[in-house]
Length: 227
Length: 243
Image (cartoon, rainbow over all chains, first blue to last red; front, side, top):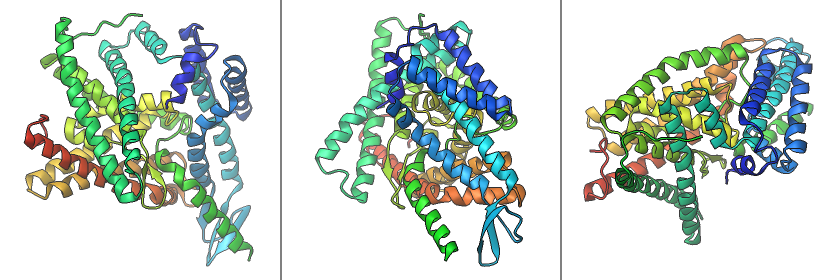
């Protein structure tokens, strides 16, 4: 279900020094959004894609599957930025709808291309980081950087509970589907509400269980996370 | 004739794309220019600091709350990864923010929301590291505050609980969407009409999916809340904010 997480643990670069990978990827990200140069951005994009696909050996079709949601956002927002409406025809390309013009100017076209390449450069940098570095390595780096302990603890706890609930919801959804729980919209809403409720109750029950098990292990309000 | 073709094509494009943009309200990685990325991070910072202060205070009083918050974070993350078919035939994803704010309070939700947004950026490639500030402001600060405020306000006046919860979740979602539109419009003013025109454009484009999404989330949150009250009355579970 979590494609990125799966590849983070199985790729070829997973044992590479996480600090170095992080500095490299974040550096590329900062470079991509601060330098307003499309050639630099294009280089960053190509470099990151090559590193991810050929060095870390992430399957190319999976890589693009991960990119679908961001690309849809880019398409819709990009077109929204590109097109504008005006009373006079000031555009380099436009169509007339009743007495208004809908089109784009030269300036917004350039801005659109710059934006697209910047976004591709930065998203490929982030994907390089997330696809090659398992989250526990990243948390190790955060610890080395002396992040407050409360943040680290919450990160670890939430990361763990994500998988508890994913598993639980998968089982519930399968059981509901076997009983035709998702055949109509009305059924679906009902099923989803039951699912969320069951998850919430699972949360509370798990909370009670964890309280007991932590107390038996002499929990004093602090989780010790090792490297 | 040519105009008709263009309009037809654009409608087709919208129909093809809408099924997938339920989750696309997270501003993607690298989308905001560096100036706006920093501004929104700075705006969010005081809220985050207050949130963490509050949370560590809670932890000092009752150390078990740490575990509860960790579980709540996982819960909100899994909710946001779910798909719900919505009225326009598209799929939408609940944000879970309304329910979380009602159950756990808005400042706590800011902390949980921030970490969940970070995990969404890292594990799902939704949102991003550079736009974390902007997304936190719209989803983890304004959304919970609106939901919680409306819930408390209407609760005092003894309005129908189902309606109260629906309205709280619905308006929380709606405000998140309006804030995101404002953020995008500020960063990308329109070539001919400026900020106002740009904001109109973003509001109308995202309205196609976000208004049905908000309604669906409102309905689902209300049903869940009622089910929880039932359990609460029977003594199966104990939640402090449900009474």
